[in-house]
Amino acid sequence: MEIREAFGQALLEVGKKHKDIVVVSCDLKGATRTKYFFKAFPKRSFEVGIAEANGIGISAGLALAGYRPFISSFGSFITGKNVEIRTSIAYNNAPVVIVGTHGGLIGPDGTTQAGIQDITTMRAMPSFLLLQPASPIETVAMVKYLAVSREMAYLRIARNNVPEIYDKEYRFNLGKGYVIRDGNDITVISSGPMVHNAISAADMLRNDVGVRVINLPTLKPIDKEIILSSGVKTKAILVVEDHTVEGGLGSMVCEIVAEAGVPIPVWRHGIPDVFTESGTPEDLELKYNLDSVSIAKKVRECLSLLPKRV
Amino acid sequence: MEDRISYLKEKANNIRINIIESLYRAKSGHPGPALSIVEIVTVLYFSEMNLNQRIKDRLVLSKGHGVAAIYGALTELGLIDKEELYTLRKIGSRLQGHPDMTKLPLLDAGTGALGQGLSIAIGYALAARLLNSPSRVYCIIGDGETQEGQIWEAAMFAPVQKLDSIVVILDNNKLQNEASVVNTLSIEPIADRWNSFGWKVISIDGHDISQIKMAFAVARDTKEKPTIIVANTVKGKGIPFMENNMAWHSKTLEKDEYTRALEYLKRV
Image 1: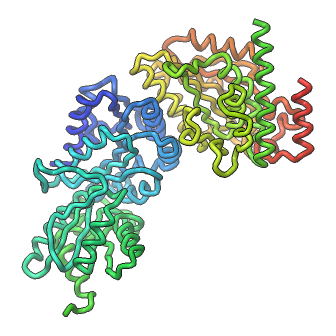
Image 2 (image 1 turned 30 degrees about the horizontal axis):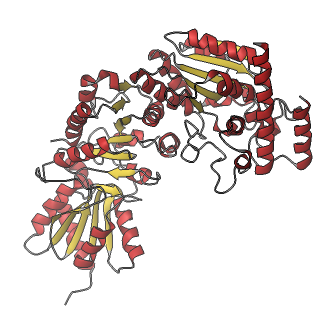
Image 3 (image 1 turned 45 degrees about the vertical axis):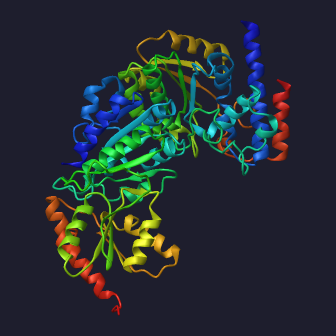
């Protein structure tokens, strides 16, 4: 299932229960899947047209008046409105959820529509949560959390089809990472759809390399504890992300490891400092070495750079 | 009625004194853009707005740099004391250089990056409609501020939603940060532009208290569309050496200027 589809259905469900939830669309109800909420709750739905800045301000006003607005657009577009998010929402501590869909390697629409700098941009907003689900169950759990929270949040949603990795027992704990695979040789940290490629890579390497795979659904506040304990355990960390390596998850992990003073090498493996291009998501993963085979190769390359272990 | 007008005139003058006293002590700030909105702010706080918590009217100062006028009015209302007024722009103060509602909850929005307040006001108005609240929403914007694209996104949206609870007051003081509006990027014909977007437009002398009160009354009677009051004002109004003088957009008051300014105001 596509994560955006899980998001759209979850938003509809929480909308039934929580009458304070309102939704703002910037002419992308279909693509961001807020269309289900719009159909069910027309009075609590606002179409602002292709005017994200106005939509951000309106969301801030609705939130300050007591509502819980979700405003959605493509991540690249909505987080591009930096000064509007900064002043109207963040500066006012207005409890708005900004939903940025089409994060990462989105496909043939090309790089203008792809959210590949959105995490870097949003992590500088004071008090904002940064969340990114990896699976439909995680998406639903996150939306339920956001429905009752009064925190400001950026929810990054991928367009990719993803398999499920969790079951009904899954509980979303804000700020907590999750161990998906355990291993002793290297930790691979990821978030969102790239978690699945990391898992496949770990499974490919299973016979001779122990890969500990960590999913971080909360990017801010980040789970320092799981990063450091995993790093100490495996002596090496590879961060995999469908986002620029400049200021993304890899950068966050480097900061945490460096400040903790633990001598663990960290490799950032994501989109280099370039714009991506058109192509199928599969082609793009191959081009940026983010498919599971390339990630497995990268793991071996990282391990080969480590001093030989006795 | 006459008594009421003279009462409001007295309040306006006191607010001007508060502006001068606080900005002098702050040794920085924006006197001109605060002085041009004094009568508007006075009528809003002392006559027009319902400040009752339950159905509170909202005021969004989109031109956040004029905030000294708001602090001056809140002081005159007794919601801020003089001692705190004099902390304006100093470390640890609730009175920030541009409005910060997280520090000063008396404000309905923090602003400062221009062009954004009208959208926030629309959010308040939509919320009031959902709640079936009679709450009205006032938004003060600058004339130079209408050069921001977001203003026109918002201007397009409010009439489509028939938001008749919104009243925008355009502080048409003809000067912006570096030069006159007309020599920077002309916004004319400003009244026609808003009219063509579907707004009820009322042009007034923005320092004439009777005209301001009248315009708000017309706005209340205007149904199914939002109202904009084009308030023709004078930047630096009330202090002769500041009036229509670009330099006083943002300038520190020296001791003698402070004394002269207060003399003018105390003579009124």
